[in-house]
Amino acid sequence: MGLLDKLTGGKRKRVEPHDLWAADAEQLSAFIERGGAADAPRDSEFSISFAKEDPARAAAKALGEARVRGELVAPSHGVDEWSILIYGRGEPLVPDFLRETVDLAERIAAEHGGEYEGWIAMFTPEEKEEWGVEPLFED
Image 1: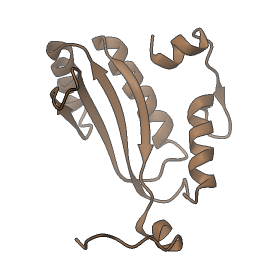
Image 2 (image 1 turned 180 degrees about the vertical axis):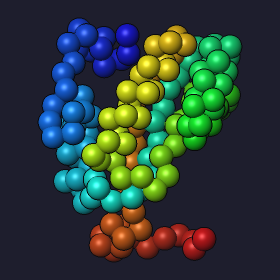
Image 3 (image 1 turned 45 degrees about the vertical axis):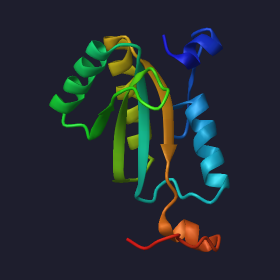
């Protein structure tokens, strides 16, 4: 059972229009309100945490075999957990990517004794430009 299940007593529900969990739909709505276009290609990350190394490595292996892009992160800088970051690169969040990746992360976490922590989406350079944000350095 993930953190959201614990907070909601296991009573999460899917909502339309993209069949997302209600909490993910709310987060997506807030992202859109801040100027993000959910159907624009963008980078995103999904996080799973593990208390122990062996389950984290097993989960990372399963994701690798499924050809999912990501990274296994060892404990460091005062963080005692192992983490897996699943990367979305150049993928629109909707209609399917967000739902499918959250479902995958939750399934992998459950199968390997981890906790799905959530997702973040990056704003595109065009969205940032509309706000007048200037990059600190150029690539």
